Image 1 (cartoon, one colour):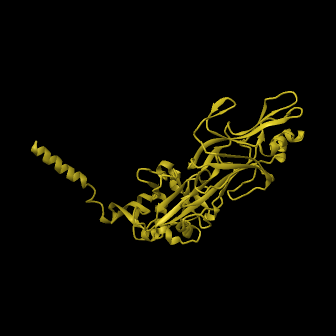
Image 2 (cartoon, helix red, strand yellow):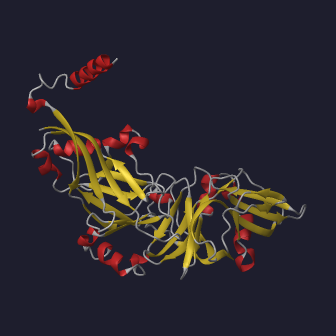
Image 3 (cartoon, rainbow, N blue to C red):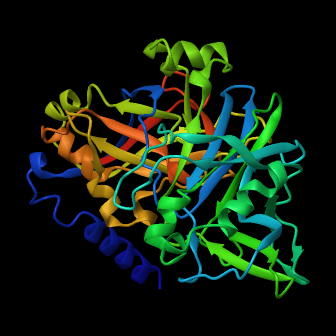
Length: 426
């Protein structure tokens, strides 16, 4: 038995070194790692963002101790639910209610909000693109308002039926003037929706600015519970109703206002407004709603590649959330994009391998985001033209209000870093 064990041990040693005797030293591969690759990052203002035809629409106001105040408002067309509408003889409004189906929120719902509704005065076009900085001309008279504590998870009763959380805004200002306008629409305006949106061009819904906390509410305008219901009577009948809808054919978009970050933390303003990019070495900021994005470079990676004949096994960009506050939930996911020399953005090859491979999802346990950049880093060390670095944004920025504070690449604790595992010949 002892002899057998010695023979086996001898065999294992021989098997473990098979090939090394015949492989030239210059061709032998060794696996190593490096976390000393320089990273340069800083935060800048996001450009205007396309917000037309998004799946959700945002409404509200919040005051953040770091990012300052942000307001979100909605422009939307609204359509007839049927054509050739006939309200009967001498129709009179009882009430007109705007319904908005909740689909989440961000911020503090213990802070009351006041929302106001106006009628849009200029045409909105279904084939146009609208951006987060755009405004539409409004008729001066407010047509409805509501002060309330948001309850985005509480069911409500509508017409005797219990339904999921929905905000109801009465449009009853000035003696139901807006409701009377709809009931007294000319026959041509009620013939079809092309004519109706010329008569009533749409609604603008905004929130009064808050001075403390506040919230941004998420609404699904396409849900069955969203729309507008007219309760009315005519000479022949009472207790009548008619429904107006927001459909996929309706132009709708969000307007976001960050007040030029006048109310933001001075350190954020120095970096984002006044362009002190060196502050990004210690701390960086990201914010949805067309707020703040981050630029990232690996300035010495190509030079490193000239002195290292390597194949990348794994390259991970690691970022740490350093905000200790529980009041402002970090984004579930970040997006990382390649930036061309003309500043246009495109998807990285690494992302084409799937989101599970690419990463970018928040790990609440480690407070980290990680991106796998194997293809990008390999192309850089192979001296390919990779444009003008990377751009990071909150994923789904047009429909997400989350914000984030990240450590910079020279932070004393949990710095932003690029960790490379590679195979090389020594």
